Image 1 (cartoon, rainbow, N blue to C red):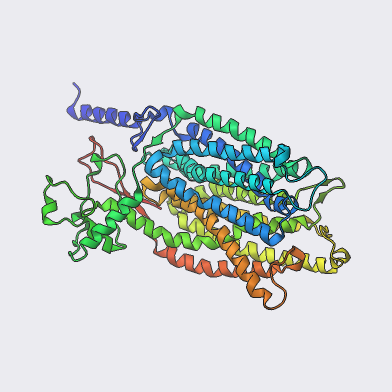
Image 2: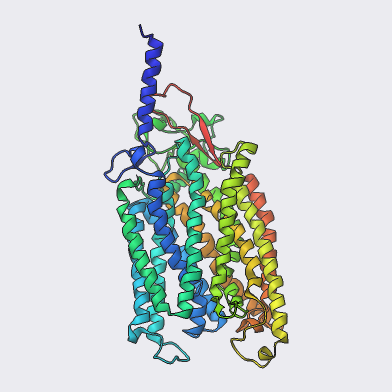
Length: 598
């Protein structure tokens, strides 16, 4: 006869299998039901999403890598104006996701925002294509001209900023939507999610590599029109493919404005500022986690002033009273406010790295345009194609990290990630100093060769110096290696460490590192130019041979060296998010544990 204990164990095992069958992380399937684990999410769904990202990166780098050349050669802007135009456009493009991420988290949801913004992006590419083929929108008549038509400039920049608008919804939501396909409460899926960010960036690098080699080659040797047409068709196909994956996705419903709940915490804390804080954090107000869909956060000892928002007054202790969110907040809401405040120093200390990264699309490319780019006797690589070495460096870095370092470090440290996210980010910051130092040395060598060249001395333009373009390879490769640590680490950090309801906005914070880097670069170029012009020869002239970019690169190396010490100071004081393990009807009698999310 079967023992009661055996029947109990069997019943619990059956209930556990039933729980395993469904995904209970507050996501839903495309019909609004609880998702079935076996037929939704994970890599099956992620492949549709990564395909769309590959296409977008192909378009982005196929255009931006050669953008400064287009502005100087076709629209005929001088170097300083063209560099600022690129920085402004790139800055807007990478700051727009702050608005797109906010709208997605609060109102539209990530899938709808990705689909809408991808269509806007496609519209921008279509307009860019038309500006190359419609005679009245072309830069000039056959035979060339000294300045492009005004109508072409208007159409060109309207198309480019339409792409920026599309990027504003696409970039913060697509990557976080892909990460949503993995259940954080499921051990196996959580491990796969750690690799997801690495392989996402490999797809990004593949798009970058093809964009700055194949697409740029077509732009330089055939026409911009043909290249943009290819990008437009590719984008249209991948948008359709992304929509076809709709039945396989897991969706997170929008949870309202996160800024409102943070403001409520601040107001409640101010109202209760005179109340004493309880000695035991367990006395602070919280809703049991089996009564809500989302995850609850554990209490931390930082920014304890905000804890007063969760202090219960006498009239609030009664369960019958409906609590006013402007007077009483849960511990989770308070901790979400702390999370946002805690990531600000990390964001600020990431900006100097972004300042280095943005140089690859401006001054690095212009350096390549002055050097010998021939391979053999007949083949000449486009200046922007040297940018592909950055992608090669990043792919090498990510693959080695994911396949060699992480398994080794997991065994050595016991940490599921191998090393913490902030250590990964900090490791990459060191590469930025080395890359800028190497760039300064190489640029000084290029200048010395230019000073000895008779054609340069005679003032001739577009002179190709007797120095191989592959002298630039080390600075691209080193910065690419740093990207594999810092940029990928920042993606994980801003997805993982923000409140669950603000993850699109979290990815926007990551993108804004590069956006702010572009604006800072423009500001630094202007400031350095004005200051150094007072001494005679400015560091940033009308062309590279009349500039002293080596000194500009040394300045960036110095800024990043100081920044590393500041970053370490903040990183050592940072407190990672702690998440309560989820309780269900079958385990309410068990201890409510905490899980650290480093």
